[in-house]
Image 1: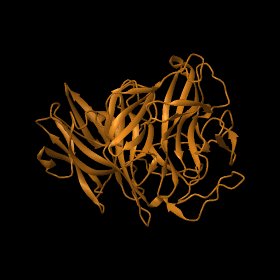
Image 2: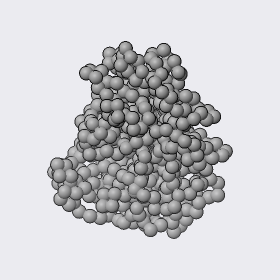
Image 3: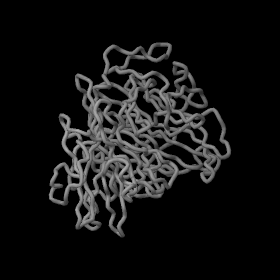
Length: 487
């Protein structure tokens, strides 16, 4: 789902869209605009909500609110499941299958993945990723998209039929077709579905009227117009850095996709559903796209945004970044679903840095491990309890001030892991195994920063970090790592 942007990036994006002209071309960009350089984003503490498991989290997470304090989540892996939740970030209980593979020879014979769920009054509208002609042992499958409706809040679904397909046929040893679509209501009369096209590893977009999103009503965007049929039509490559998780920012009408930069997942914004501009600083640092498993790198996949209040993809200014997560060296049998809060504000001037990710220290008394990290921690709030938070790391080096890259690494002493946060390049020289790039700190004090120390507890043989030179009374200072953001 990674691609290059096909249009030049701009500094400004419009706050509102305009009505579509009769010739179905891209609307003229209005004058009122959002300054992307003025966005300030803080990424909070990641929470592992589900997993580890092998039989779900192979698609985008989606959810709907049933009533205050009652939610229904959807996750898939060949079969699609629903499960209950008490908050937009809290789900558990038994998995209930709601969509399963179709009969042999059908377009969904290898599975139905419920990708995205939208509420339309008393009906739920779902985008369903289908696969057929699959031989996963040799990397072969053929993708397409259908739509389904539910009138009992997602417990049962009625598939309406195919709506988006590619122009080619299945090929031995290849992944073909178009699928993995995430949909969003543009509140301009249309659903917009962002889909992966396998032939050139691109993302394309199609749309259909909200009043009738069934088969035969989807048109793909091609060569400046919404003119090609959803079934087999041509489509413009929107860019290779995008993925297909789509949301709409309600306060300004912008469409948001989570895509991939070289240094991690990043936000892409569009005023017209087709031209996307990237925020230069990623949400999270590191090599998070390691699909070949096992790998020394972690994997963040099927990433998406949901609103922190109602769980929909119609966003206020507080969101959850939701994704499938694999730890370094783990396989697809050990998938987690992670919810990570994101808050966004717009200043009246350009800000730098724009993105900060929260650094936290966790304590496992059984393992005698103090783990200082920005990453999801298996066993969070159970075997590992939250010890403290330590400010925010930058997700990109400052262009104006000297910075230090910090790395999260580990060394095993029998049953006791010693996690260490230290300057990049020092882990392996001390016999530790690098896990991830955690982020960046300033080399010297700046306004709004605080010191960050590397500490060591000799009795526990445990490294950790602290904002205080006395290491919060848990050990002794080893070195000053730098200065992180207080807010």
